[in-house]
Image (cartoon, rainbow, N blue to C red; front, side, top):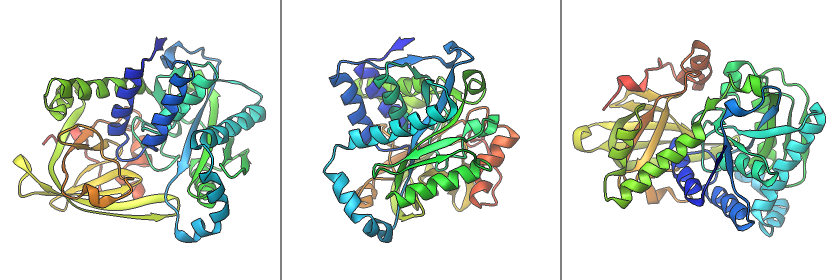
Length: 381
């Protein structure tokens, strides 16, 4: 078991911001959760999943949601106004703890620790924070290896760990218990609906199962990978080296997909998601080329000169060319991103996603694109 320093957690945030692929939850919330732990005198600890007893129980806990329209916001105006006066960390923590507590009572088990649903600056930290509050170690693993827009896009789904029973709680005070979902897709739809009527976000505890099962259904050592990735970015900047070149040298499964400047970026909020497209005009060896990116909460499908290029389930990461830090699709003002010089990096998906079932679940065809998946290692720029 490893005790994490403040520097480790700072590096983790940078690495998770890159592998979050534009999403993965709120960076601001993640930093608040980290500060709360260290200000209380506690420390984060990290345990390798293989060290957890096989008969111990685990579950995934995360915030689920995204954009909602003005009609929903207007309907919830009084609730949302009341919440603005309260501490967000306490609100988010309380709703997640309620969801966990109800799930424990439902299955009659206490959880050894909590599995992050994905890699990202918000959802990765949330599960680690909840475990640390209870004196539990955080697991060095997650259920995707990157961020993803839908709960059904989970390595636990590939491995056959059911999504239900699951529990949902929001900051308004509502609590929902789903004893049985027909399948992972129905579980996603129900949680997304709950998120929409909650103003865009709901805390979900799901997929309770033994550690023995989880060891076959998670991306192992993904948290320590984020720490390492963030450390590479930090030390390269301290030495006045190129963070992107340092990443490419240190991460053997990472390739440069594109380099250029952001020309345009669109976004809309709908159905509990954030949707949009962006266009990057090539520079350097990519001069004269154009990269188009489609995202649904996270960057998922790309085209180069209008021909299909890199896609999910591989990680498509947009990073600032000078700082090496990930670019979020959730910035309040997209105009600040126009003209920014960026690098687009691709990271190889976990082995579970490279299976036939994994590609059916999280390939571009899942999102309605008649595109065959092309591994990023064949697209090295």
